[in-house]
Image (cartoon, rainbow, N blue to C red; front, side, top):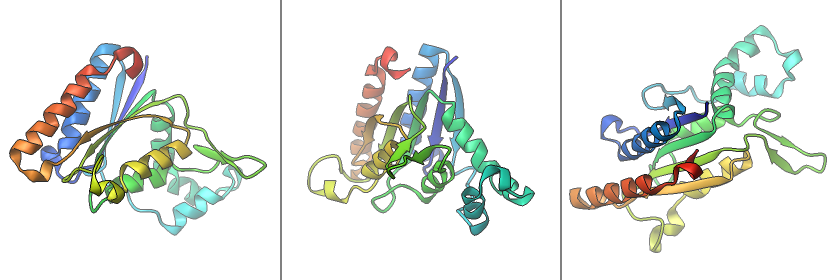
Length: 207
């Protein structure tokens, strides 16, 4: 049975439009394919930020890690396991100050592991190990950043595409929910358009 990993990262809770559209996408894919869903709400269950203990544990060879280092890596191991076993990854990302939330950045820090989710070849080139996944980015933005003059200020989608590609995930589709700060009508129009894109996703491609 296939598996969907759903990452929600907005600080707006039940009011989050990225989570709303992301949840609709997950429900569509799950209903159509029978996939199991693992949900990580990074606002409800915040991850501690990186600290020296975790960094040192990651840099230590597995057979040389102390009990304390293994304990420090336990949460990272869980998050990496959820990612590596997923066939589809849905990331609901709110743009905060032109980039991803700090909670989503923390998740990325936990799953970006040398020798586990990526490695370097003998010639120093990186190779992503989290391959064979379809990724959907549901991106909520107050303004419009996919086109027009604000595009150069979008440090959300380019960053996500780069770091996910670094980990081996290159089959990425973005679903923007833009202009939501322009008033209720604009927000409703953007959500409606995003939900229409969700409904049009071919199931054979999605899963």
